[in-house]
Image (cartoon, rainbow, N blue to C red; front, side):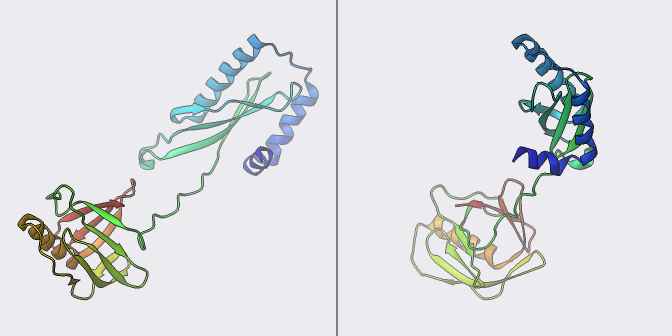
Length: 224
């Protein structure tokens, strides 16, 4: 698997050069002390050449004592301001005889987009007012076009639409009619109003769902 990754990541010219060096070089004797010294040199050179912030290096992969090239994976943070602290991964080839270093970005697979529908979301904050301890305010956006959940005392449901990042409830909320403590009922009314006036949503880098209402207030939810 590693050979496939290296072959796919580094161009054929680099690999041919590495093998050519091996054919021209004598056996490079290894001892425990030598290996520690080589590890330190290789790690330092690869980290420096990567140019990444807070970079770390994996253990080296050595193919043989005759092939003097070893490989490491370097991980860290892109230093460029426009990258906004994005994580980076690179492959590093280090020649133990010539101390030559070659680094190349190892493209990482993008994370899958967070799922919005058919997931239970639990409220952590409604309109910047928090929520009453141990009260359950939830909702789910179903694939069937229905939104529903618990609003502290009663269950509720309605229809909704999502268009170009805009979320809109398209029918009046239907709710059960249980009675609870006055504070819970007041919170429930505010929650229903928030749901009915949602205009947009975003999912944060941490996976939290942020709903914006027509009056500009926001409410925060996490996966239940």
